[in-house]
Image 1 (cartoon, rainbow, N blue to C red):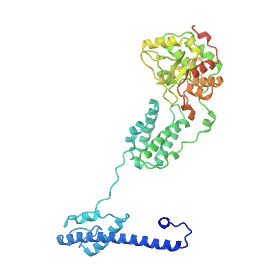
Image 2 (image 1 turned 120 degrees about the vertical axis):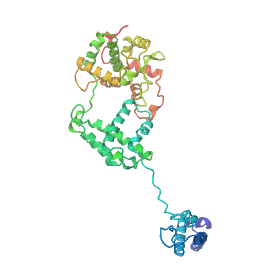
Image 3 (image 1 turned 90 degrees about the vertical axis):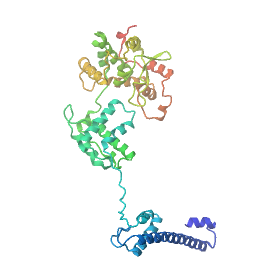
Image 4 (image 1 turned 90 degrees about the horizontal axis):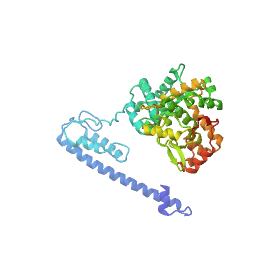
Length: 438
């Protein structure tokens, strides 16, 4: 009010009559407010008197209830005074509205029940929102969707089809406790990383539900998985890279020296591609047989097969060792058969099938160290990238790894110059000349 008066009177703070002017303006504003309020009250009371008069003429005493819920003889004067005051308060925005009183007197002689309060719509069971949640995450691969559904099924067994609006933090904590106490299929308890991943599925779902307006924000993200055990803290990384001696042993094993039939050949190529491109298991399974030419450089095409991260769709230049081993000819054969790059037969095998098969082969022909698995070849390839000193940005682009830096989004497609730099600098840590076919 002071600001409004100052603006109206152009007061700059130096006017000797400032105080008097402020008082006069305040008084004028107050008079205007009271006048409007009085006119409003007079208008409402006039209309209400007419409604009551009409009702008195047609209705016997006690025929219907007043808006205030009074039963028995209708006391018109008392009702008028009370209802009139309620209407004035309603007109000012903090009481009931005048329309509700008009309804009471609209049908003289009728018994009108109080208007029931509006009930909020029923909250759907949380399980019915699974489809909507997954539809909002079209980038999830099949394995991740399966993982989400496993978590949802387990949570359903714990809390049932509870309305989503009634779910609170203890419901999510119940799932965390379930994971903490659940035995592993391999014996013992679930690994802490597995617990964190599964619990993260439920927390992500509830954060989505809050954002969509289905649930109350009860700080679901505050629910924590159990702490790692001492053994888990000391175990470190579950996988490790191959040593040069182990790589030598691998490339001198039976699949490379004496393959027996097309399935053995496909298996050998799977291992060679994993070791010299760093591609993920599922990427190699889905990779097409047709190679892509980038200028004069052959590239493995993972633009559709790479799905794990935003950086996964990519081209990987094929190193001279792979070309000398006859990869272009192998790819042409597979394309002529209508197969993908490493498809062993008319039946396309899954990434899980390949992992089990090749991990058994590594255990039998290289080492039975549980930290050395098929995925270890990706670790070895990353070491090759570091040793070549081609820069983290190009290394990540070839590796299909998202580093989160702003600059990584510029020039994302592999250029011919980048492919040449890769070919010129990346070398296998062991000699593969014994496998060359040129």
